[in-house]
Length: 301
Image (cartoon, rainbow, N blue to C red; front, side, top):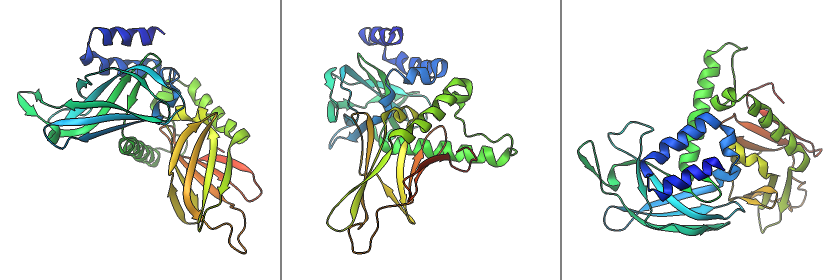
């Protein structure tokens, strides 16, 4: 509550330039405990597209969780050309909205981009990365576009592979730096993955032609910032739907196989690939119905 009160004061005083450094400080000091304020943070998606005319961005936030966030202010955090990586120019949306509704997209209007950085004028054409911070009564969250989230996970995975390749067999690690700094959270990661055994399931949706597969996982996994793909046979499928419904993360993979065809059997040996800052996890459903999980390229299982 003290953290939320602090950001509420920043907003009341319109101290936008301090918000990004404050949120970095919270991530660094509190680590996963900061994420516990709103575990479903990764289920907020930013959509920031250039306007047809002028130098501005039309901005909205899609909320794929079941939690409505009230009294919400959006701050664009823009990395522009000639800026250091990790430095941002902050622009506030003109209006605070009453609510970012669950399972809906909320518009924050148009935000003009007309800045001077180190004496040089910058416009929309100078944007390198677009991120946002959402301040609400219930949470303070980074909000990123899906492509940014995937690129960040890919970069972390590549760094992890390089570190493991250079380290000895006893030194390789799949831990996120924050998990290492907050070692108790590593046991939380393991506990969440083990707990998935209790409720995780694969269901078939019969469709004309190839059928869909729906995977349900406990919503608590959302705190791990996951990104999912389904592997069936030699084919990888992206999730058409990835939402929090009730107590579950519900993933829908479209057109996997025609399981209703003559001679076809129920889906077996399905693998769900979950990319996460804490390591790439594989959930496997075998034809006997058993579910196992493992860290990719790891003996942990």
